[in-house]
Image (cartoon, rainbow, N blue to C red; front, side, top):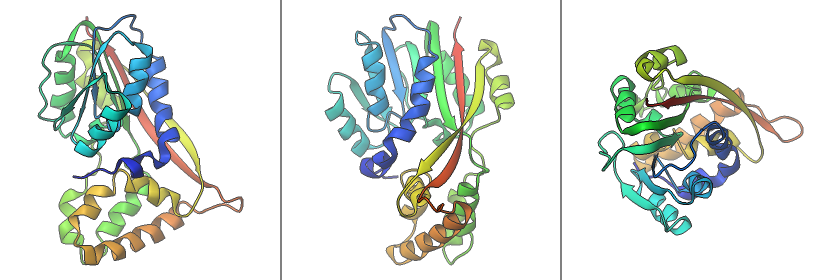
Length: 253
């Protein structure tokens, strides 16, 4: 799946807010090794480097385009091109951090405990994942995918709810007694079709790329219409876009 750094970073500021909130909750003095999983274009990795300038930081992502952008932003970090589900750490880390990436990885019942095993004793696991898969944005995307001649192509790509509930994820990570909380961010977006533009940088991409060019425009038109109804633009030009996110913080004893 190809990622567009420019499309994703159109909403860099609101996408950054959850990462800042997670970073503020991490209690570590001088971590020696940090893994940033799903580092993307490196804008959050740069925050990690700013807080812990002496740490060795390794960013891991499946997009070469994103990593090229990240390497220009933060040349002192190490960058690894890998599928997160297949990646193997070279050594145990003091911090395993991930912002808005692990919902692309299946089987969290296996994967989340594996991340804990990638930590050194005393190491911290700090994760943020979207928790909005029942929101109108996703319901609209599903409806669009299943409403046209493309439905047989897109149905296998639809992911109902890849992030478990806080209760489910606490049970998966019970051994390390994680802190888990959810926050809804209310984004006040402007411009034409801002929610469509938002999801074009994330959840819409694999669906769009699966379609032949002749269907892409029609599919986008259906998405645009459904999203405009679900998120109407107000008289002042603002479109409100609530977005719930789940945070997980745990320490390996």
